[in-house]
Amino acid sequence: MTYYKKNIRINGVDISPGNNDQISLNWYQLPTKTVIEIPVYVFRSEKPGPTLLILAGMHGDEINGIEIVRRLITREDVKKPLCGSIIAIPVINIISFLSGTRDLPDGRDLNRCFPGTKSGSLGSRIAYDLMNEIIPQIDFGIDFHTGGAKINNYPQLRCVFNNKTNLELGKKFSPALIINSPFRDNTLRKEASKKEKSILVFEGGESSRFDYLSINEGMNGCLRLMKHLKMVDIDLPNNPTVFLKKTSWVRAKSSGLFHTSKTNGSHIDKGELIGMIVDPYGEHQEKLVAPHDGYIIGMNNQPVVNQGDALMHIGIEE
Image (tube, rainbow, N blue to C red):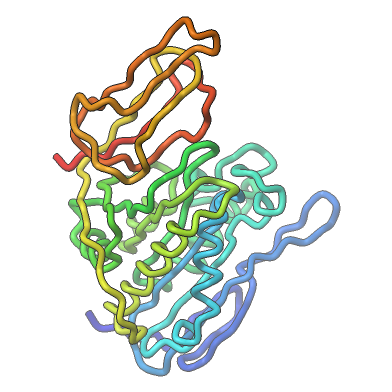
């Protein structure tokens, strides 16, 4: 594939090859007349090459991804790529980040607002600007996410197995776990695919808490991908990767106190005891057994659970 982009143009600002810049995707005014701007960092080599987007903070409480991008853009080898260009957005959802919440003030999920509209809701306008100012100029992207409240995700990469480019990029990222994850409507990943742009989703840790295993794995995976794209010269060993074709949840069949001795990321066998739910009064206990052979890719950290709550997310190879 031949890459050549004379200028990258974002919000009316041109960044030519060999130059770096920090600009704003757009500005958005709150009811208090406070203006919110979304910083975008662009690092360009004089040598032609691919353009890679690294993006985080789609949900305001997903701080592990924000820390991954922060660490990447402080590196001199990322600021001075050997070829191509890197576009970095540490926090795309600034407003939710300030309030420490997942959703926007109107209750919308930014990652269900794509492709967006120029005159729509706040989320729709942010999505529109991202789709029109950034996505057309990139070749590939990494969208960093974190597990929801109470759910801790083991470091994992999500891509579409039947999309050759998506899967090959995932292999070069080289996480411990790669999960086949079909597109969801109105997400960045699906809308970008319509423009033939491959976006990988990295998940790791729990919302509103730092998880340093996930942070390190996310950063190293991104550097491995940059090395493959010849943007950086770095020696990082690959992980032995497990490919998970599908996933399922183990849910609580009764309410009570959830106990498990299993660790996130570990392999389990079908029929194996993986946990216990007991009531506070010592009158009832329920054994939880593994419904499949697989890997634990997410765990509920909440000790008090209700009937039907998701407890363990299991990834299945076949």
